[in-house]
Image (tube, helix red, strand yellow):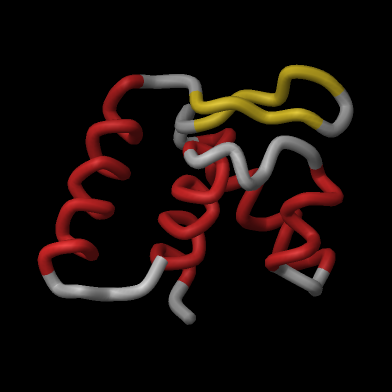
Length: 81
């Protein structure tokens, strides 16, 4: 999986409230380095923010639009979530 698709998937999971804490993300991504790199990248892009030690939230409106578009495209293409 490419880095970009990993970030997109993580954003979708956060937006859908499937991921609220670090332990939730680790259910989907097993490698600590992978997880840490993705989270750092999303924070650096200002797409998410760390609320406290283990909670994250979407920070800006732009990624939300991107996620919405991505979900619509998935439905149009009949892809599973």
